[in-house]
Image (cartoon, rainbow, N blue to C red; front, side):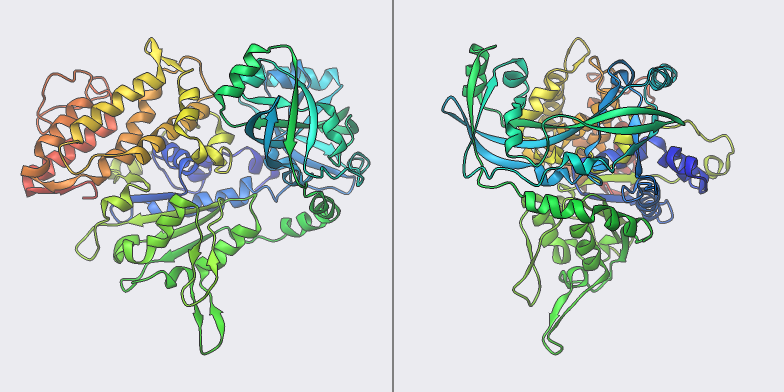
Length: 594
C-alpha cells in the first residue's frame, strides 16, 4: 500500500477495502464512546462482526494512525499532519498537535500542576506548553487557502527540519524553589475561559528560549522558512471568587504566585537526547497494540487476566492481557485494546469486578498472591463482546451501568451482498473521531464544566443544556417506578458523549443534529438494563416508546405502530423498544440483550 493511501484512508474506507461493511452510525457511536469511557460492551448475534470491528480498528490505529510512524529522514526532517484551516493560510501557522509534536519535543515533561494565588486568592492551576509554527511563503499560504476552500476538513503532510531545535532548548534553568512570582494582565480569557498565556518571565524556569527558533518546512514539494516557539499556557479550575475578581479588574495587572517545588526538566533533557533513536527503533517494530482474550467458562477470579504469583517458582505468572497492559503503561502516547471475547461465558462480576472498580475510581488493582498492584493506564481500552444463548450469563445492571452497550444487528442477505453500499466517508472531523486519545480527559469534566460547554450550544431555539435536562428527566421519570432508574454516573456520561459528538461535528453554534447522538445514548446507556416480565416492564416499554416519538401524547402501542424516521424523535431507540415489546408479548419475558 502506498504512503499516500496510508495517510489518506479513513477507518470506514479501510473497512470497505478489507471487505467489511458496518453501518456508519454504529462506527461513529463506537469511536465516540471510546472517548467517554474506556470500557464498551458489544452485543449481537454470533457472526455480526463484534470482535472483528474491534480488531480491525486496533489494527488500523497501529498501521495508519500510529504516532510512532513519523517519517524521519536523513536530512533532519520529520513529517506530521496539519489541517487546512483559516489560521493555516490567514495567520500562516498553527498550534501543532501535542500528540504528534511530543514525539519530537517531549513537552509532556514541561507540564506542572500546582497551588496558585492571584492577589492572594487561592486556586488550583496547571501549566502545559503549546508548540506553535509559523511559515513565510506566499506560495504555501495560497496552497492552504485553496485546500481549505475545496474542503475545510482537509489534512495534509508538513515536513519540518528539527536539527536546530537543539539550540532552542537550553540546559540552564532556574529551580523554582517553591514559588514563581509573575505579573499578568486580567482579561476576558482569564475570567471566562480560565486561562492565560503566561508572562515571558516564566522562561527563566523553563528549558526554552523565550523567542522563536528557525526551521524550514516542506508542503506538497514547496519549501519555506519558518519559526517554531513554545508557549506556556496556564489554566485554573473553576473558581467563582477568582473569576469575579478578574472580571472586576479587567485590563489591570495582577500578581500571580505559583507554588511549584520542581519541574522535571532533567527528564526532559535526557529524553531529548535519545528521542530520535528510540522512535526509529519503534518505527521498525511492528508490535501489536491489541490482544484478543477468549473468556473461559470456568473463570472465577481475575487471575486469567492479570496473572498470579507462583509460590513454587517464586516468579509472577504473567498472561497475554497483563503483558498488553504493561505495554500500554510504557507507551502512553498510543492506544491499546484489550478485547475480551464472549465476555459473558462466565459471571462477569467474579473475574472483572476489580477492573470495574478501577475504571470508576482510578485506583490500582491488587495482584493475586502478591503485594504489588496494577494501575490501568488511560490509553488502555477494554472491549467486551457478548453473545446470548443458553450457555451464557446475563450481565447485571451494575455492569451495564459502567459501559456503553452497542448492539450489532444482523444484516439481511440482500444488504450484505448488494454492491450498492454506502461508500461515502464520515462527514465530521475524521481525525478527531479516529484518534481515541484526543479528548481523553473528557471523563474528568464535572457537571459544572459540562454545563459551561453545553449551555453555549444553540438548538431548537433553546440551549442544549436545558433541552438535555428536560429529555433526561422525561426518561428518568418514566423509569423511576421500576428498578431501572439511572443516576449521576449515567447522566454525566451521556453529557460527555454529547460534548464529543458536538466536537466531532466541528462544534457548530447552532446544532441541528443533536438528536441523532442523544438517540444513540438512550440505546447505549438507558435501555440496556431493562429486563423483566410483561407485568413488570410492559407499561414501562410502552411509555418509553412514546417518549421516542415526535407525538409523545399519542399513547401508541409499540407492537402495532409503523416506526419511521419521520415520526420518531429517537428512531433507533424506538425500533429497539418496539422489538423488545414484541418479544415480551410472545415470550412473556424480555431483556435488552435478546
